Image 1 (cartoon, helix red, strand yellow):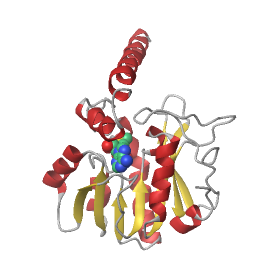
Image 2 (tube, protein in one colour):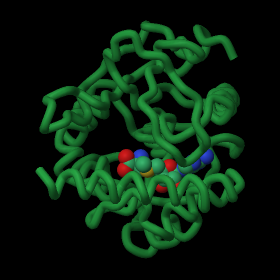
Image 3 (cartoon, rainbow, N blue to C red):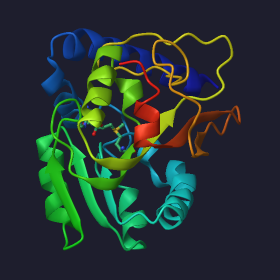
Image 4 (spheres, helix red, strand yellow):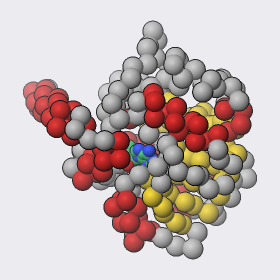
Length: 237
Ligand SMILES: C[S@@+](CC[C@H](N)C(=O)[O-])C[C@H]1O[C@@H](n2cnc3c(N)ncnc32)[C@H](O)[C@@H]1O
């Protein structure tokens, strides 16, 4: 109990330090580089944070192959790919062309060194502005809840310029009386895609549980699959 309290206080101090010295003094392009270099998300297993540890990706590793098979997915683009910690297990057992992209160049170079093969590639890409290659499925896990509304809007506009059939996004589900707040890029808040100002349409194809809090038993994160054009045609950009 005391140990938990001390941990929570230390985390709050770290967060304050981060907000004042890293986020507020950074521009958009360098925030995630600093997060990467400081291992700010604090997982010993994955530089992309505890949500990317194997224990927290058990369900998505079961669900993704089902989606790949059901929707006859051959070409996947995964943005952001982070450190590929859990996704490597999915890719290993699927016969897909995989392209992992992230805004942090150092991370991409490391992924290239460790994991590139004839069917697995990595490339530096900013989802807000860089052209996305044609693909069957875009996986965008654990990103929007770290971004301000303006950046999310930029990403959706970029989706409009792409030729991608399906998109799989992270949502914070079933939050009663919840109001989406804006943040500075790099921070975190729960984000309900169906609530203002995003108001995503409910015409999705499929959703599944991603992360469940083991203390409260509440689902903290779910993944939702849309047909890209059906999502974008029903969003006000
Ligand atoms: C929490 S990690 C999630 C990684 C991965 N999707 C996973 O589930 O393990 C968030 C990642 O988003 C990347 N990122 C942030 N802004 C981005 C952008 N505009 N374009 C591409 N990647 C971005 C960060 O560098 C970081 O690696």
